[in-house]
Length: 216
Image 1 (cartoon, one colour):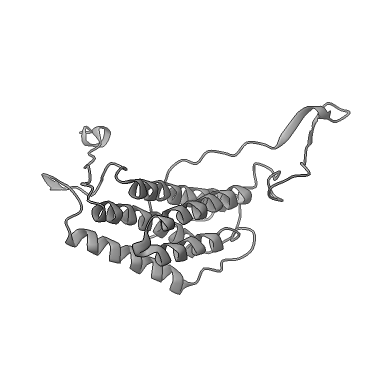
Image 2 (spheres, helix red, strand yellow; image 1 turned 180 degrees about the horizontal axis):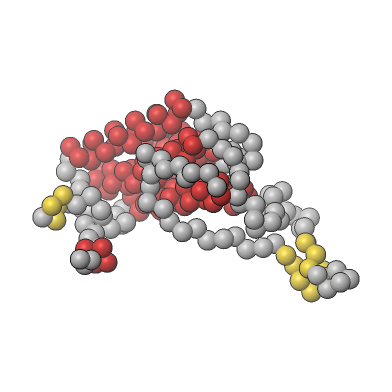
């Protein structure tokens, strides 16, 4: 097995759920009693019936959801609408990467990194992060509607990273820059949520984990 690539932009990974099998039992069983794969004439996407060992379709559905959610957030943020729509477009370009090739350029990934740094600088300058004795940068994923939606995409970005690692374990080849991009997407929407809450006058709620702080 090849060495695991750890992105310098790594987001905290989250376990991803496996997609269900597209098998139909009963009347579609073969003569030997085994299940026959049912393909609907109304199939919404040509790879939905792929084997559960082929994670490419799972990645494509996941990034489709992310891009759609980014579109929702763009509609709620006129201040940065064009920027968010560009991130939305990049996520959609990432969608077929595991099946085709990496079309997101290094310049586009660096652009996303710059937007993340810009958001962080603005939030730091405005003291958007709460104080809890020492500087606390972990907040409850809450806030205004648009800020909370951004937190959802922060988590979806981490799940995108998780799926990519599972794809690599299955022997699917893709450049490390795709993992960097996915981590940056998570980081971007994290900071965008903080920025939106700041602009909307929501005071962030610090979160200090009982589980980690109670360890000796």
